[in-house]
Amino acid sequence: MADQQEQLRAEPVIAEPDLPAQTREATAQDSGATEALAEQAQNPIANLISVPFQNNTTLGMGPKEDQTLNVLNIQPVVPFRLNEDLTLVTRTILPVVSQPAAVGGNNNGIGDLNPTFFLVPKLPGRWTVGFGPTLVLPTASRDELGSGQWGMGPAAVAVYTRGPWVAGGLVNQIWSVAGDSDRRSVNQFLLQPFVNFNLPNGWYLVSSPIITANWQASSDRWLVPIGGGFGRVFRVGSQPVNASLQAYANVAKPDLFGDVTIRAQIQLLFPRP
Picture 1 (tube, rainbow, N blue to C red):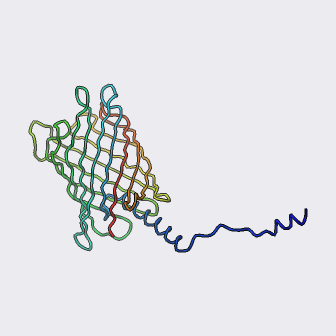
Picture 2 (picture 1 turned 180 degrees about the horizontal axis):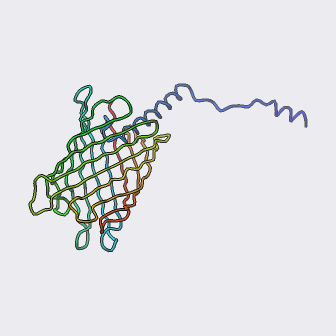
Picture 3 (picture 1 turned 90 degrees about the horizontal axis):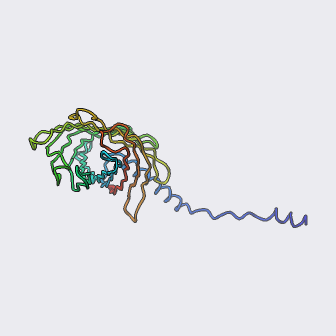
């Protein structure tokens, strides 16, 4: 028996075969590329072509809190390099809206087009900034889904990146400059702070509430959501994709607006070679 125990102790331990050095290096490169792509996808003025499909569903709309507002924002981002030190980043939002009607049912169609143009200078360090005009074009397919006004105003964005963190904010103010004289003029403010914490394998945590103020309203001017969610950058075949899911409680809101907004986004990424 002692001889058998001694033989067992002397038995060599067979280790699992290690990955070849080239495989380990390729895996590390893929992981690093995914993390870098996630940082770019989280920066609204990165030098990256992307096409986000952002769906916002707000529950509890209307006087009985039994209606739903759904807005799908199709918002391609296309940068143009003007010279070595300056890039023009275009960001256009086309909303596809399903909005509760005044008397039963929903009004469905497209809303007003909102293009924004950011001039982005090349800066040293961890900051990226952009500024430029934002416009509103009265493209709504139904009167109820748009303002009936042409609008414009200033927009700016700042982004700070450090380690796993990507944080910053986007702000704009739009005034109507022309349009249907029978419709209310536009005086709208928007602030979108955002913070992302990147995790291994392309996963990340995110909070990116869209805060708005309608200065034309006599009361209940503000919409202030609080919340966040998670996302991941991955590949479908050779196509990089950024997907995220977030939930927000609307802690300040107009009287008939819903209490909760669910945001789901699929963003197609087209990194430059």
